[in-house]
Length: 424
Image (cartoon, rainbow, N blue to C red; front, top):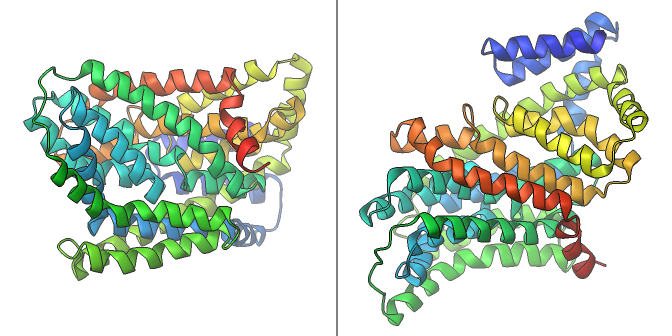
């Protein structure tokens, strides 16, 4: 009954439009102090401990480096390279969008940053080439979510911090699913693309575009290479990514790198980091309440008594994520569900990498799920387009993500084989 009261307060506040941070914090405060009579000093202690994490320090570093890459030139160079090499074939611009989002996702780790940065260049080009608005905006929105799966992913970092897992393992596990999902998006995008093709660019222009993009392409190589070789930890490599950005942008992207753009990138990164950390503190209060009420242990026992198979449980988790994703942002979803679901996965013998990849796929769905998908609103705000247009175009690609989730659930090797081959 106590747990139901806590969840009810959270749901009620969320329904009336309270910020997620407020809803979680007040529900947690009510449960911890009001119902369980735990001293109020536990709240600030829990807030501090939730953000005082060495692995979690990757988050502001990658957010800042991604913001710099998006506003100071590299994102433009990446899309230009993809468009020069792929734009002449049927659906070439659509393919270029997916490939550019995959590359940029490997730089930023953020779905919103990827969609807005690549979309700012891709949308005008696609509309001029005869792509309809629905396909254009929908593809950009969903392809942007590749930044959640392809390392370095901010959400993998958060997940690793929650379950005390290895960031390196989680990064490695994301490569193959990310490539598979990107390939599935490309197939659907090409089938939906107009038949007209653009002129083929001469090779001298292609090589020039590749040369211009090479400094940007070097960032994931250097960052991930330093992690895998053991030269730096994941957090140190995240800090290295900022240094790399501030070195290459003034040298290779002087036309885009300005003091104003750099300051704006810094402001954006600080704003996003602050939002994430405030939500983490509120979630810590909420998680403490449900943990003291033994909600995770109770659910684990219920699942054991029901004799659910791992596959059935994973499908059930995916359905919960799908419903939550329609109304709640990704980070609160992770902090609400993982403390409850993860202990059950351990009881059922589900591989943590398998559960993590399924979770990340569903967070990708959450960022583009109507009515409150954050990437949907980011694109409508950036391009002043109706949200209905973006949603209609996104639906086929949301279907791709849901099929990919089922593929991940029923083929666990998709989540684990690369880790086993590369790290073990």
